Image (cartoon, rainbow, N blue to C red; front, top):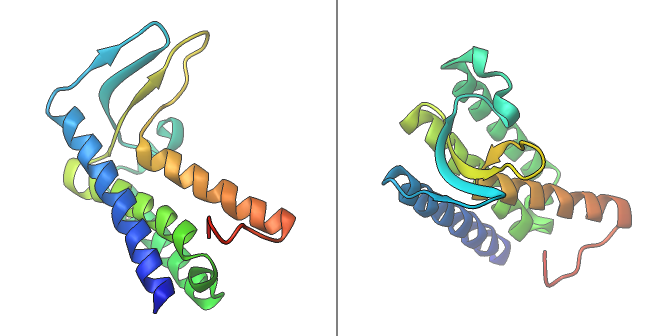
Length: 149
């Protein structure tokens, strides 16, 4: 049962933080500097607006992929072994998915434009990347510190 509390805590923390930040930008906040702009963008695709041609179908495909990944994590006992990392991943994934259903696309707001144009992204995207890095570390090096997992 402790693993479920850890999972749920990480899930809710990432989900709520991401949604609160997005609300700030949906209410008109903007900030610009030489290298980074914090500005609202609705991404109708995935990374780099890829797959945006799928339109409304993309949210259902993403939903099925998240549910499939959750089932895999459950079946392979990854949720139980790494509840915090799993909670981070699924909290971020469901936050972006909620955007697709409520706003027609993912709310992005961090735009790097110093030296080269980089994709615009959000907190959930960073948390998804972080969770994949932590899982890769576990896979390649065999152990994640008990403080992280």
